[in-house]
Length: 319
Image (cartoon, rainbow, N blue to C red; front, side):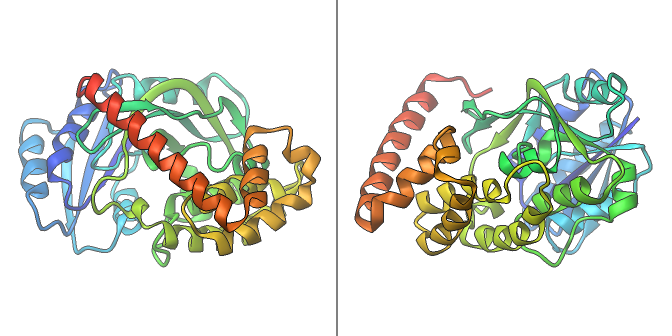
């Protein structure tokens, strides 16, 4: 049995599709709570209509307090030994729950969460490609060095005992709320491993209008605090590796001040070591390019991305 929780705020164009992707799961032993986080559009009406025809669905209404608070309401209002979160604008493959729950029974390792691979889709719902993610066990060191391999909160099934041990989502932070929670589980729970399943079972809507992830500045500020707290806990790998991918992303987005600081920390792992990985090579290139070179690199990258996503969006079907 698994508790499925959807935090929903003004996601009327997509919430029906999210709910239907839960209703059609091949693993049907679930309770489903949608927390309407003070929506001002038709989100609540759409949820009520689905709940009227499926007794496994119920809605909780609350004042707008953010996704972390909405998830916490769902956690306290459910009882199953496993918990899965599905954002109101994402969707699952029908085998999502079945395959991820199976992960917990096929290994004796202390696995606190299983996660799948992710496909990204445009706001319209057109899939534009996969995201690379690792498979197998991810401890704290790998989790940080590979920059949150779960990628998004809709890709996991988590033991309820993890929340019992380390607490629920931190409602005082405005960005990187998922990552803070996963790092806390990896650092302090008795089942600290995250286990990657090599199957694409979730579609994540990429940078929809108004999404929290679109606020890059706030995310980098929150990420800086998390890296400062958790990177020193790495024991197998140099702590500097936790800064490699974040520095590349910050350079790409034009946040050079924080990117330079992170790059200096990453370089403590050694230039030779960084040069052996794709992300390390990217970091060295951005770091050495200087302000003028970085401007050209950003322009070239944006031109390429616009062309690729535009072409793929025209070719691929909506679902």
